[in-house]
Image (cartoon, rainbow, N blue to C red; front, side, top):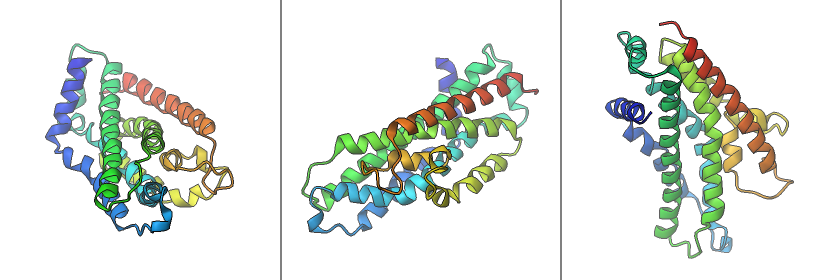
Length: 242
């Protein structure tokens, strides 16, 4: 498995993936920088900036970036019989799928942590003058990352299913665009994979809030969808004809 992880990372590195990881934090940095934070918001400045940034980042860019990463990690396998060459190695198909999933998951976590640093940077430079709410924001960052795991598993399955890299990316875009509309439905929103990252990153304890969903419910739904999508992709790749 260690050798597989190194191989998958090397292949992603060759696709110049590193700049993509910095796109999302840069977007959060730009949005948070331009948020008009008033002095009367003392104690809530970081949270206010984070909530404004999440409206664009967690709703659109985070789902899109996970799709890009999951698609690019299968790029070489779709070229010149790459799947045959990979499966000819002394390893199992299940390990190949798991290695690809772990690499994309870790890169997504790095991207999330960079977003946290971007929010901290904005607060320091703009002199918010209040303690950084590490525990609350970190909960949202980790929660958002957990919510991307079902999406990563789904997009990885689609990337192994389709021969064209454009197809899974198009599917991801199509289902990401209406996310904000779906989030307005309290019944549907918790079960929509493309909306779950935003809901897990949304910082609120107010049950009357439009986007409020109990953390326990979200974890259950996200965990269930992850198991489903991962199992589908895992089984498909094991039986894939090459």
